[in-house]
Structure formats: C-alpha cells, structure tokens
Length: 61
Image (cartoon, rainbow, N blue to C red; front, side, top):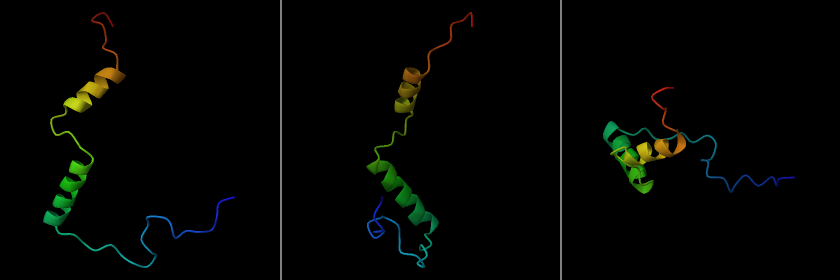
C-alpha cells in the first residue's frame, strides 16, 4: 500500500494560485522549455520518426 506522504510531489500547495504571465513571459518560458527538451524547429526529426513508424504505401494500394 502506498504511503500517505504527499509532500514529495511536484505539485504546488493547495490554495496557492499560479501567477499570471504576460504574453512575452509566456512565450519566453515556452521557448526555454523547447530548448531544454531539444525540440526540432525544422520538422526533420518528426518526419524521420514518422517514416520509421509508418510504412509507405505502394502505388497500387
């Protein structure tokens, strides 16, 4: 059975509301997260992954 220790979660304490971010702050936070996740802006990684997952249809299909 799981322990009752809920202090170790990454959630914010109840009752505290998240601060509102301006458009610029939100945009910068998004960009920073994308950098940390090493997101690809060109789409080549996505295309490569899709080509790996999906098989190409033959012209007769």
